[in-house]
Amino acid sequence: MRRVMIDVAKELEERFDFAAAHYQSVGGRSDLDDLVELLERLRDTVDQIPGPMIERARELYEFVGPEQFEQTLAAAVQGVGRTFAPNDASDFVKMLDLSLSFLQAAWWAGARRRTTN
Image (cartoon, rainbow, N blue to C red; front, side):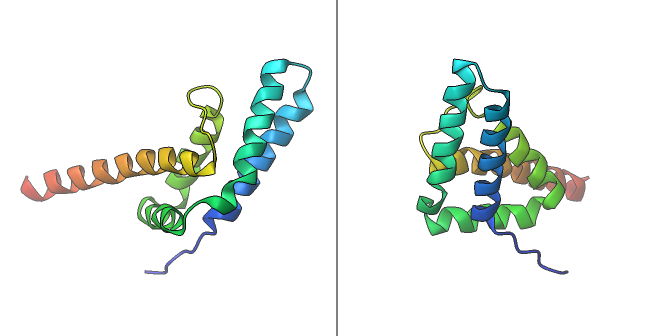
């Protein structure tokens, strides 16, 4: 099995930057200005995410695979400012970790059921 490496920090910076630029281009609404500010703060604090958190995200990426990781990350970025407002990028990664861990647990539960049937 070929191991895929992902630069989680770089991926997060790019996502936050892209989302901020998108909402900035729409502009003209104070709620979007607040969202842009939040996304920029997340982007600017990516370098402060502790190494073990980055490593855990990378491990979950390898477990769930690139497609599921992408879908979960995209949904999490879309949720910023709507369903949750992380203080910084570390808070965002904690939420992402919970979402991906849920998928991992669901997979293990399904695997356990398959082996006991």
